[in-house]
Each structure stands twice: as C-alpha cells, then as structure tokens.
Image (cartoon, rainbow, N blue to C red; front, side, top):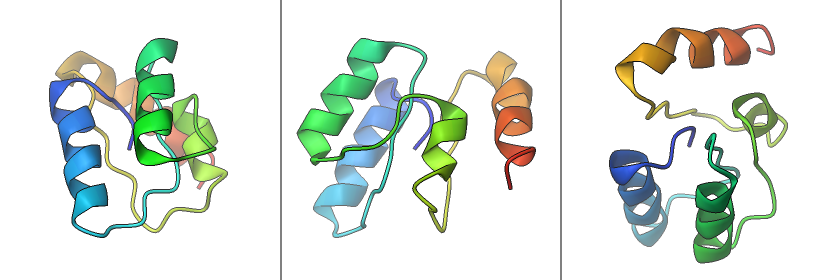
Length: 79
C-alpha cells in the first residue's frame, strides 16, 4: 500500500482484517508509515520504491491525484 491517508490507511486495515497478507506500506509522512507498520505488524516499507523490495503481487496507490504520476513512475522503473 502506497499512501496511508484516510483511504489508504483504512483500506490497509480493512484488507488485513479480511485476511489479505500485506507485506509493506509507504507514505511520505514517516509517522503514518510507522503507525501502519505497528498496527499491521509489518517490518518493511518506508518509500514507494521500497514497497517493491517485499515482492508484492499487487501494489495499491492511494495518493493524491497530483502525486499519482510521480508515484507510478518511481515504482515502474523498478518493475
């Protein structure tokens, strides 16, 4: 999960409660990344590119519209 605002944070928690195996999270705000890692029991994630180091099957981008292009570009070069 990249982007841990109201939507991304809620979606990450809901997915975890539904049994999805979350492997990493990232947000531009370190306190949000730390909150999600502690809440979800994750050991990985701090930036959008670092999420890929966990070898996820799916990457959710939940970032503001103005940040989608940059976040997608940062991830795409590492695929």
